[in-house]
Image (cartoon, rainbow, N blue to C red):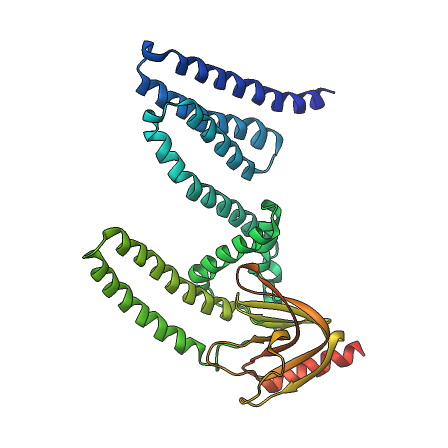
Length: 343
């Protein structure tokens, strides 16, 4: 009984405290010239946008174990309430907070997902040699935080891209006996190197030229260029760390973060080794899960459509998958052995 009443009292205590703060804010604003309007505006804004979310965090997130991400809508509502109370000519501080609100909320969201994914990876650390996937950990963490599946997949993609661009560059990939890489002989590494070299030159030259016209345009161009370079670098590192994996029942075809499709071995109609000049007869149902600059070594034809997951969680249905592997003979032998075990 004591625990139940305590659990009930925390939301009630927050509602009571928040209502008191809002009523006090209304009273101070209505005092007019009796109190310096600038002082009142700063106090009201800080009380509503800082104190109220802080109380929510202490009483309900820490006290009741509510999801930390729910602080974000409390902050948004508090900011809206402050903008409705504070006179328009005293919105300087509020305008700054509104400007920072969206990137701050995004950083908080990505931070929560990152922490959850880090915990999942640590728990599964003993499975890394057998193909444990960090991208899957990011996706699981994102879905536990973000209620909208599409947004969760997009957030997981962004975090995974940043992870592979950073930690992936110096961490050595761990490959098991049933993993098949596609970055060693495909030539994609050389393409990425050329893109990065050209991109750095374009970044510097473009920034100098644009700064003569507009400082803002120059920095926007610089930010987009840096993101593009980071994208290519992270994509290549993801290709190194996320090889295609053959399990007892599935072949999970991975092209870095660009495509992932888990194909059950029992749904294989046939697997053919194809020449470099091979062309798909129906592009609408064919997935080209091949590094840029390479041609597929094999094409898997399926008996039923499967969903493939692409950039930012985009989905498409396919009945044939083209893939490139650095060791085609070893891949074929492993696939034949796995299918015989299932027979």
